[in-house]
Structures are given as C-alpha cells and as structure tokens.
Length: 248
Image (cartoon, rainbow, N blue to C red; front, side):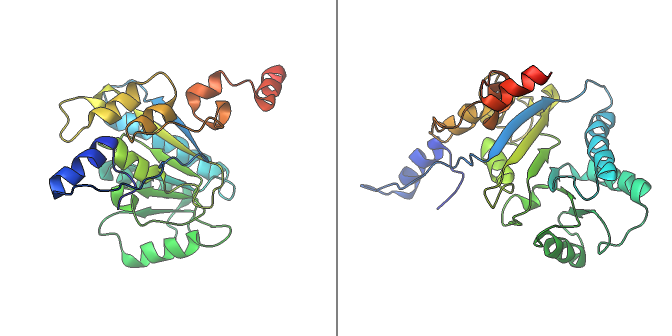
C-alpha cells in the first residue's frame, strides 16, 4: 500500500514481486483543496542570499501578523534553516517554545520542542504559525491546522513533493503549496534528481495536470481556474476573478 506510487512504479512492482493475475485498487492522490503555485527564485550568484530572500520575506510577515499569519510549513535545507532561526531570534528575541510563534522540526531536534510544537498545532487556534522543517515531516506529520506548505527548493521527486504538500489542508480547508526553484535546483546532474520534478518545475501549463500525469490520473473537470493552480488562475473567468479584475 502506498499513497505516492507513480504509474510506472505501479506497473513494475507486481513484476518485481512475481505476482500474476492481480487486481490493483487505486484512487487519485489529488487533494483538490490545495492550490498549486511555483515561483522562480531571485537571480544571484550568492546562494545564501537566494534563500535569505525566501525566509526573510516569511519571517517579516510573521512579525507583522503573528496571530493571523497562515500556519505554514517551510521546507528548507538545514544550513539555511539555522540562518532563518538566527534571523527569527533577531526579530522576536530569545523566546521559549511555550511562548514562541515559530518552531523548527528536524532530525535530532529536542523531543521537548517537538512535543510542545505538536501539542500547540493540535489546538483550534495555534500560537505557532511558522514551522521550519526538513523532509522529516514529509510523512506521519498530521496537524490539521496547516494551510500552507512552502518549499525553498524542490525535493528530488514528484512523489516526495506530493507527500510533503499533503501535510496541508488535512481538514479539507483551502490551502496552498508554493515551490521555489531555479535552474541550479533542477540540474540533471544532481544526485537522485528525477525527470518528473524537473518537468514539474519547467512546465508552463496546468501544474495539477502535470503532477497527476506522473501517477496516471487526470484532474477533476470540476476543478478549474483560480481553485487549481497559478497558471489556470491567469485565465480564470469565474465571478470572483471578474470582480477582482474590475476593481483593479
């Protein structure tokens, strides 16, 4: 059983296991309540400044709106997570986890911090609004309050990406998944990089269609325009979008 097996993996697995005359039961992995978006990173030869642009933007928003900032998982490499935590401390001071509006979850993090974070995230209106993390929360992390997942860089495959954005909208509430990338992130000589995540980052059409095609599915015909992805939103003609364009 798996929630993120690609179409090719589903076809190959029975052969590897030596199974014959099998019946495969499957369902689309799509979470229609998650709006998909991707953004190119700023251009800079300094890699640190590229990541700083992402996490500083979010940290400053958190400082402005510490109680209304959307509960967000920010997937970020460990080195830049430490930079982000240092920046957050410069904004908020030395807060204990029981008082803080942000947290960090990663391998070897203090169990006290992890448990305090999970306890707060399972309340109706969490105090903690920004969680810096690595792929350690890609599975088995199920707080229902997460409404936004940001990737500061692409994971190595669409399967991993689908697993990680699935942390959002666990109650079925409207959520969003934002992926930052640049050419360096999707170079074909990167160890373990999959063609499917390269294709996802390079596509200039519906992100959901591209994502689901890897798993052998089509997106629902009822999901269109501004509810789908950043590309479909551009051509959306629903009442709300028309009203917004008039107001602009």
